[in-house]
Amino acid sequence: MTESILVYQTGSGSNCPRLIDGGNVNSQYTLVAACSNILYRPVTSSGAGDTNSGSFSYNTLHLVVATYDSSSTHLYIDGSQVASTPIGGNLQISGSDAFIGGDNQNSWLSCDLANGQVYSSALTSSQVMQLYSEGLEGASISGAGLVAWWPLSGNAIDMTGNCNNGSPQGTVSYVSQPTPLPH
Image (tube, rainbow, N blue to C red):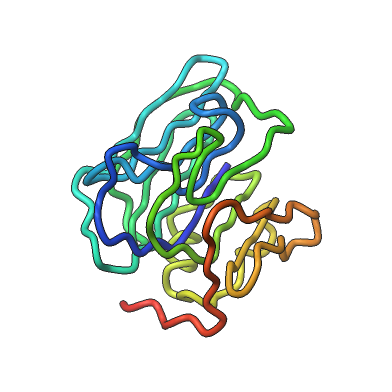
């Protein structure tokens, strides 16, 4: 499984809101902006496996990608792997809602998000670099099991045709003309 999203965060919050959260809090998979780092937590039949990015810089646009390949998690920032954690087991996936920029406990992130993608497979490091190289307006990775793709450039429509459309909660602003991803 892979979660990918572009994030521009101006500062840390005290409640560690989610960039992408699948299902109930800490019950399926979570990609969190946790104070001054990024945390990825998939929940498998073997338990939860936390992978921390270490330092995360604010006031810069970043591509954040997290993968799980049934033996370990991998966390990437701007195309480079920054951490990995061994964990086995099957992901505990259900039909619960996914959240972008928040969770089901009304904890919302104050930041700019774009190009959220979820894949059923773990992208390779070269595929992650391809996403980063293509930048903000780049396409998804062909043949990698794209489940949902939210460009977030005017609405929360899933561009895959899988009907995983979003429903904005709280105050949401969309930008129709995004700025390019710096390299």
